[in-house]
Length: 334
Image 1: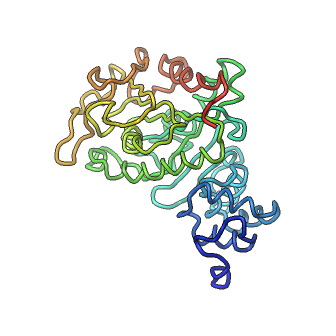
Image 2 (image 1 turned 30 degrees about the horizontal axis):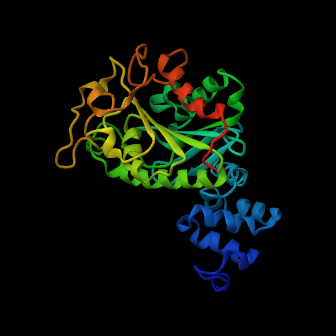
């Protein structure tokens, strides 16, 4: 590998990088490169070279934000096959797969290549790679993959614009294990926010004509709150439900141009979580509180903390309208 390292420097003009040097740089620096740089480096490779790279180094290529989604799908199918994880169905459209920590998984529903609207679902505490498809506690309705698929299906039911929408179930961070001290603090959320911002930057590169909406359930909303002030203008909506807080006192403190939506069901246990932040504990005002300043998300018929995205609920229908709205007209963010 050392002879390949010598073929490039960090400030080498991308146009002058050879295929072999591009391959080396992706392998050595991949996770540290900006998504736009990743896109340029992959573009210097012949199709046969990029395919070989994905099959030989699937965990590296499968995590490259900025690389073409189809290349990442190929790499992650290979990684999951080698790990003997999942069946043929669950291996399709996997944008991220790693056994690191509690597991990193992201699955796409729809076509990122043609999407004019991309929704990213960020799940909360207790979610792991091991229950990404089966659901926390073996309860399928708690599966991030199933929830994202339901959002996509609900948008599809709304009209032909669905062909221009993609929904990503994104478990790209270590979630709190349960209702312990980690869930009351923002340490894991801040780390997750870094990964979420990178994912979004990659989407801006690979789906340049699309607008983006972020969906946060429970602790996932804390992650979105920590990322909000650094999100690009392509992110037009932040939608949170069952949220214990976004780390701020009100929507203005998020320092984002995106519209903020929030909902909390009457029988959601999170209603008992104090809406405060003191000495690093707590997540601030709950976004569903009128004083926070978010637009209201319909939740009247949601029975508890885990059914916001269940078929037939007002919440799922409202989320689908928000996700599908910008796909009805061409994005102006390209």
